[in-house]
Amino acid sequence: MASLKQLKTQFLEYVEIEKGRAIRTVENYDHYLTVFLEQTKVTDPSEITDAKVRDFRIWLNRQTTGNNRATGETIKKKTQNYYMIALRSFLKFLAKRNITSLPADQIELAKVGERQIDVISQEELKRLLDAPNKEKNPERKARDKAIMEMLFSTGLRVSELCSLTNDLDLRLDEFPIRGKGGKVRVVFLSDEAKAAVKAYLALRKDMSDALFVKIADEISKKPTDEGLTRRSIERIVKRYATIAGISKKVTPHVIRHCLHPDTLIFLPHTIMSAKELFESSSKNITAVDFKKGKTIKSKIIQKTNHRFVDLINISANGYTISTTKDHLFFTIGINGVEEVFAKNLKIGQFVAGIRKARMDSSNKSESKDKWRLIGYILGDGTISEKRRGVIIADKNLSFVNHYKNIIVSEYKHQPTIIKKNSVNSYLLNFYSKSFIAYLRKIGITEKSPFRRVPKSLFSQNKATIAHFIAGYYDAEGNEGSSVKFFSTSKMLLKDIQMLLLTLGIDSHLYTRSRRVRLPGGK
Image 1 (tube, one colour):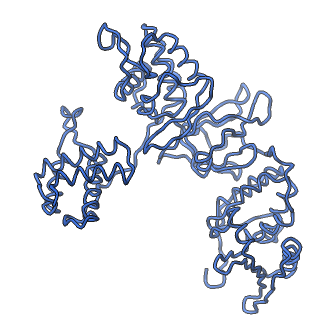
Image 2 (cartoon, rainbow, N blue to C red; image 1 turned 60 degrees about the horizontal axis):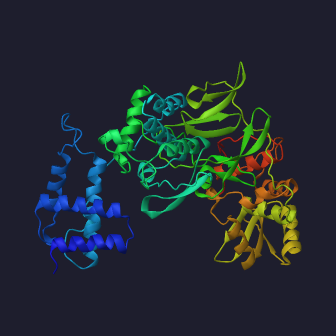
Image 3 (cartoon, rainbow, N blue to C red; image 1 turned 120 degrees about the vertical axis):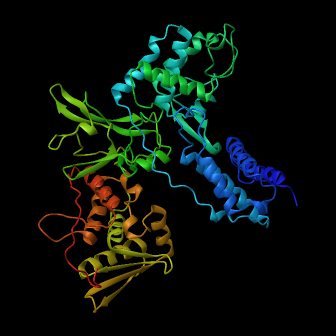
C-alpha cells in the first residue's frame, strides 16, 4: 500500500482533477493536512484515530496567530474548522479506496456564530473615497483612487481585483471576472470607476500587464513592474480608513447595503425578488426620477450577495420590507424629497411608496379566459403530476360550471364534475398531460406555501391581469363587504399586491389570525 505521504498527494490530485477545485483550495488542503500529519506524527492511515484528532484539535485551539501573539489571541474557530474539513475530505477519499482509517462522520465541526458585518454609512463612504486625494504622490494618488472606486462600485473581491490586467476595455460598462471555483460572472463599472482607472493608466510608464502595480518608492528607489498583492490592497484600504477617521473595520463588504432576498423589485417587463434579480442576467430596473416626477428605466451597476443577521423590518400602510439599517429611503423634508437611513426612520414618519406601476410590455395579450382559469387553479387547484390532471374543489356550483366551460372552450376537453356529499362541495377534474406540462413550465406546480404568480403574467396587458386576479379571487377571495385574498404563501400575496398596483389599486398585506376550526381539526 502507498505511504501516507503518497496518499495525500493522490488526494490532492483527486481534489484538483475529479472534484474540479481551484488551485488555491488545493494549496490550502495541502497546508492543513501537512500541519496535521507533522503534529500528530502518524505514518499510516490506521493510526488516524479519534484520540489523535482530539489531541490535534486541542493543540490547534491553543495556537496563537502571527498577528496576535502579543495579545495571546488564538486561531479562530472558523479557521480551525478548515483543518477539520480538509481532514474529513481526506478520510472520505481513503474510505472510497477501502483503506482503513477513522470514519469521516466522527469528526464534528466546532460551532461558529453567524458573521456580522459593521456597515459604514454613506457619509463615511464618501470620506473613504475622498481620502486618496490627500496623497502627495500623483501616481499613488491616482492608483489608490482607482482601487477604491473599483472595489466599492463593482463589488469585486480583493483577489479578483489583483487579477485584473491593464487591457480592461473602459468603453464598456461591464466586464467578466472569474471568481471563486472558477465561476465567471459579470460585474458593472460605474462612471466614477472608469474615470479613475483612465486617469491612473494615463500616468503609468511601466510595462507590467497588471492593472494595479506597486509604486517605485514604496519598496525602493528603483522602478518596479510588480503587481499589487491581496495583502497590499488590504493595507491600502485600512490606511485610508484611518485617514478618513473611520474607527470600524473597513473591508469591501462593509458598504454594501442589502435588501432581503424576498424583496420584490420592478423591472421594465416583469417583477422579481432581489434573489432572483441577483441570479438573473437582467441589466435594468424601474427607478424614480424625482426631478421629473416619473419612473424611468435605470441600469444596474452592481449586484452582490451577503449574509446579514442585523436586519430591520419596516411596515407602512400594509407594505413591508426587510433591509440593513443603512439602506436609504425617501421622505418629505423642508427642501422636498430627502434621503433617510432605515435606522433613522421613526414611527409615524412618511416614506415614499408606489401607488401605481406600469409595465412597458402592457400591449402583449394572451387568452383572458385561459389566465382566469390559471388564477382559479393557483388558488384552489390540486395539481397531480402522477395522475396528470388538475382537481378543483368548490362549494359554488356556478363557479365549477363556469370554469368547466372555459376548459371546453380553450382546450377542447370535457372535464368531469363530481358532487361530494360528505363535505357539501363539487370536484372539477381535468386530465391533460400537455396542460400539466404547461403549468409546470410557468411554475405553478409547487405546493401551496411555495406558489407564486407566473412571471409571464407581468408582461400581459391590464385586461389579462384583471382576469387572472378575478380567477384567483373566485378561489381564494372573501364574500364580505371588503375585498380580501387569502393564501398560505406570503410571496404569492405580495405578487398579487404588485399586480394590483399595475391596475392602480392600492392593497394592504396583513397576517391572518384564523379562529375558525376547519374540517379535520385544522
